[in-house]
Amino acid sequence: MIDEASAADAAAVVALWRACGLTRPWNDPDADFALALATPTATVLVAREGAEVSGSAMVGFDGHRGWIYYLAVAPERQRGGLGRALMAAAEAWLAARGVPKVQLMVREGNTAALGFYDALGLERQDVVVLGRFLEGDATR
Image (tube, rainbow, N blue to C red; front, side):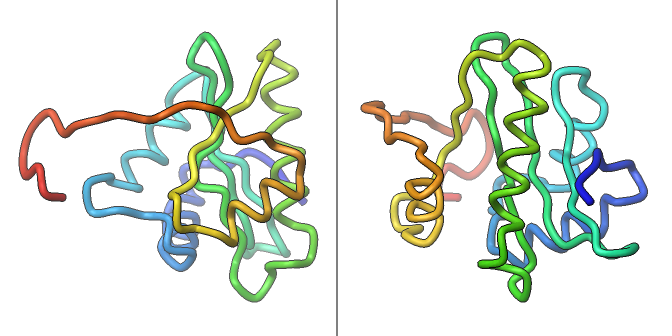
């Protein structure tokens, strides 16, 4: 079953993100989770097996396009269709809000994720992402 997360799911979802290698030292996943639940144009979707969280996707709309972050499936559940189901649920959540396009970012060396999204028919965009840290340690 896939539904919207509640604050009670925070620890399990963040633990899943960590287990799947999706967190980075410069991002606070607990704050990301809380902000998504507090923002009317975002949410966190969770897949459950009984009471256990086995997958998640953070989804949001920035006013131009939809974004998907933290798509995660518990390692023991990968390659069983749950990632596809989470993507479909995330896209349905966005479509229900009139969002015309979905985007996501994948680190260049993450060949497993790139293969997954290629198999789903997502197209690589001819875009270069630029950025910098606004405060703190720039070597993060």
